[in-house]
Length: 388
Image (cartoon, rainbow, N blue to C red; front, side, top):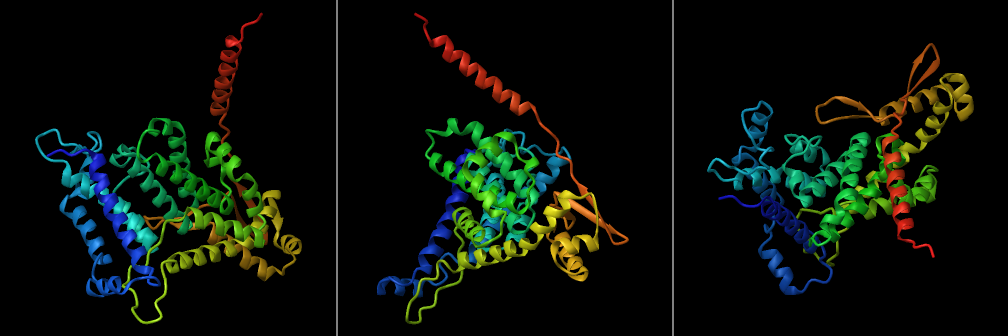
């Protein structure tokens, strides 16, 4: 049997959605009736998190999808080229369900706050290239949204920026084709959430050169003023980080069974509050680094003593701040390699700081294309005007 990828994606998507919704429902204990509480007590293993993860993992293993994708790289198998469909008399159902289950696992682990495991589950899929996940708009957006969010929480800001940029550009170019789709509102909502996450990434790691001109102008329109305030790292800035994170984050869940002890309380927000607390703690740690970055951008070389004087700290404290800067601007990727997120890097030689700034590559193509389109619009408008 061959089933459309859209149907197979919907099965996995709905399965995870039902699990997420049930966890949210179960966590709101305050206004439950006695009958509801009795049912929850009786079926305390309903939507057990291990069961959900085991189902998804079983699909991945039984479908042999990881081996199929490996063999495709070696040229033995064809999977992506046929969008997962089997034209040699077999079925696409198990293979594609296994494929989408990897995206489902990423999503579940993100909801649980286990970002490293989530990204590990997605490793067999090369998201730098077109794949079966891009054949369905819902799957495409879900994959990149959760991949980007997990990367943000793991401090892999550059990877998050790159993927959000590509996805937002894709939605910008294709959203008119989805206007009649029942998913259109969901596409627009995820689009707005990804802009908010991109604003957070660029505030913590100012790598605007990674963002296309079109996406950048949309971002400035939506969050330009807020991003400027986020650079100040005062109470107002933290309030904006809090607001954007709360708007754009997934609906985190607490997978454990509820406590039936009186008084009954709602704990559906506990997981979200914990993730928000961890995120704001990370933002606070970035506060010192913004001052260092400002000075490093001005100088190509500066002595430790001089920089310590400017920053009004002693040299040992400055060394600690510089070590912290190195630590916070580097992260470990899925392969265990250390990757840099720094727009301004440096090394110290004989008490002299030598600054290495990455030179942005200027892209003029996009700008000229947009001006040409504007000019054609103006000419068309002029042609419509009849001179009396």
